[in-house]
Amino acid sequence: MEARPRREGQELGALAFVRRWFGAAPRTDPAPAQTASEIKNSPDFLKKQQRLAALAREFGYDADKVTLSPQTKTFDYLGQSFTSEGQSFSDGRIEIYFDPQMSDARLGCCLAHELQHMRYFAVRDAYRAEPADGPLHRRFAKYAPEALAAQRGVSNYSNEHWDTWKGDARPKLFSMELEEGESEPINETIAEVAKALYNWGPDVRINPLWRELHDAINEEYAALRGG
Ligand SMILES: [Zn+2]
Image 1 (cartoon, rainbow, N blue to C red):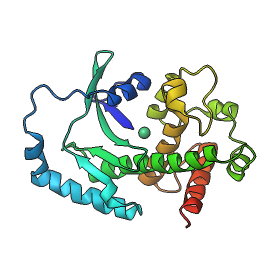
Image 2 (image 1 turned 60 degrees about the vertical axis):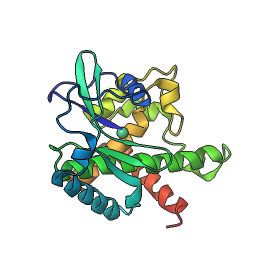
Image 3 (image 1 turned 180 degrees about the vertical axis):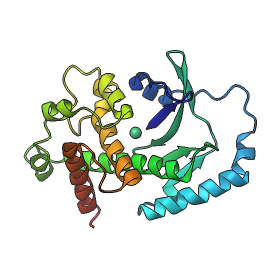
């Protein structure tokens, strides 16, 4: 998931809480200027929908699984109003929430972030399905909880997930972070690496350990997909 404060420049509150909000009925703006079907038929929406499908294909992802939603997912936390930019689901679907202000560049960043979650989920499933001495366990053994926690995140958004972690122990790679600690520091940090690489290109200066882990996950994802 990715969310941002509606009032720019303010720090995002506890993400754990935010995630739970999405499980429940999201709040919508009290007086929407347009109905969902009016938005869906607007030229701006249709243009962004086409752009999103083109981006999905550029990323090599099934464009049918990526949808632009006319809904505005807004929620309040600690007296602030937040808007969600996108969400990924474990069945492979990705929803991006339409925002007339969203540039094509930000649309691409948002999709890069959500697609990385899908790859993470796929490798996580394979890791959890194999025995404790399996090849994925061996490959990822060096990314111990202590090593990752020492680095923290790579952006404000991912650091929020480290700050709001409530687990008894440090988050563990490929664990069910949301269930164990009500936030997803590792999953979100890797998604933010993908976003930075998309936005700034391969020469971006980013934490080398997280970059290496991001690359390893994507390699294993490609291997799982037979490519
Ligand atoms: Zn996310």
